[in-house]
Picture 1 (cartoon, rainbow, N blue to C red):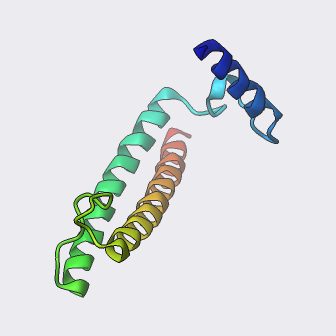
Picture 2 (picture 1 turned 135 degrees about the vertical axis):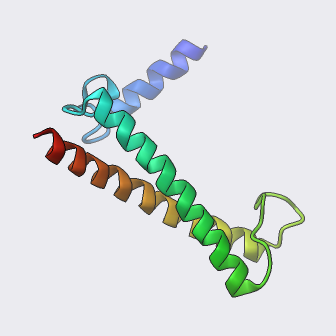
Length: 110
């Protein structure tokens, strides 16, 4: 059963534009060292962004941000606002930090 589901998923993925180009699902031309540095940088940026977002939430709304937005004890408005803000800002920080760390790595390596 699992093999069938996986085969269907891979077949569907291969039919989507631009998804069958990467060998073995990895980015071509990125070394393991570069990948590890980019991952560590992205993790740090995500952590810092989340801390800044939490401090901004406290200062702006004068209350703690939701620890678990899925909890029934959290107001819908707060849950959706926290999810949208944290998801968008942490996502942007991760992408930007990975791109910048890759640029710096390649410039130092050259």
